Image (cartoon, rainbow, N blue to C red):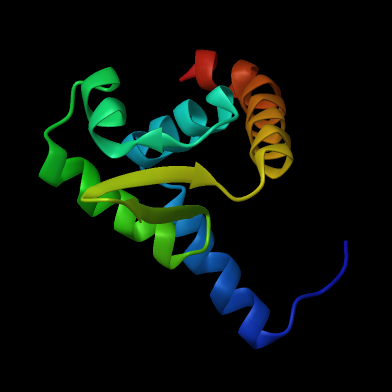
Length: 107
């Protein structure tokens, strides 16, 4: 496995922290699955989240460069920067979960 320098470690930790929320993962998955920009209110409705709560989560993702947020008129629209990267991350998470299954069931 390639080593990371201190700056890369810090940035990786910040990114993993942003991905450490179920709400933020749901947002990324929903936007990534649609393969088109989504109005932020539609995302809030689909996830049954309050607009303000959703927007706080979106800001974290935007600050980490995982989502783009842009305005169309007075509306905010979300788009995913790299859907392939999301797919790979979800696949990796699934592999990790399945590798842990025997450990999780013994406890």
